Image 1 (cartoon, rainbow, N blue to C red):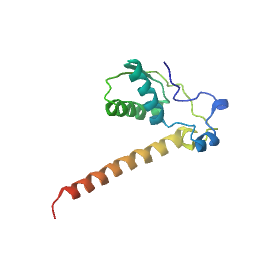
Image 2: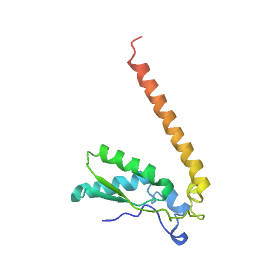
Image 3: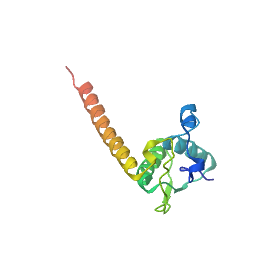
Length: 129
């Protein structure tokens, strides 16, 4: 069983129409569908193939989805160091290394801040007035 997490040529780029139509799946959407199929088939090994800049986040998401689904999986990471960015992609953050890192840094920072806000809110709810 295989899942393509990144398209490899500009002819296969994700179009704006795909993004708007809901046909495009996010990384976590792909992982959830793939791991549901894996679970049904009893498959426990994953070969993770992703753009080098996206590899760390993909790995984290695989671990999160596996934990959420109560799956014990073994993740092998493919060498994708020669994977290039797609300047014609509808996703502006995958058009160049600079665009990707700007987006990724903002996304990671947002996640940290939101997690902290949520923890503070939970703590405030647990304190008796």
